[in-house]
Image (tube, rainbow, N blue to C red; front, side, top):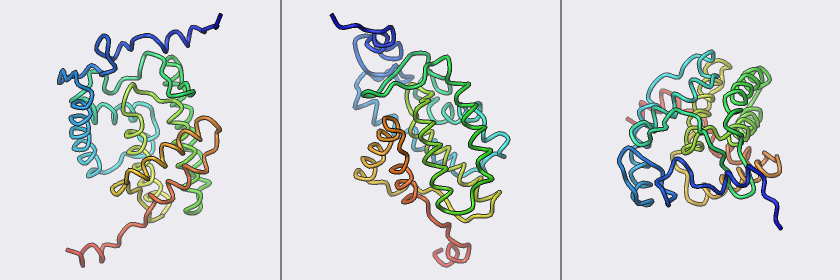
Length: 225
């Protein structure tokens, strides 16, 4: 007889976030078709993220807090999901990877943000930045605070972190995800899985190295106009 833990049983239950008998997330648009929901979600969140990227990033004191992280999720997803900005309250897993238990999400996120904020003083060049990004993303991924949208919020958050690094440490980089292809997306997912299963963030670092680009000078921007 196969033994099942309470966690195994919980993961097999119908998700409280989905319409009964389906894997479709309950949403404000009351869309019950998974493909239709995905299209609507992408459209809505892309517009929200575009608006966020036009504004000035907050000061480090605000940026490195769970509250700010939650507010990002709410801003991006509030038009489509009723749980926008809220930590999930059920256990979730992907493959053989089980993410942080709900009751520990806030404390783990708070601890990691404090740790990576302190680590900023060790950054001296590009390699340090990509290592910092890879390690930080690996931790954010394992915490997986939300029922949906974890990857998008983590990437936007780290984009803002690079802006913070640039502003306060005098570098000239930015994270650019604008030309991510299906292949690079697949590579990123593979790197995330390796990080989660083996604790090896080198593949994530390689991915972030391809996304970390030098900012254009003001003269180049004016010339292009």
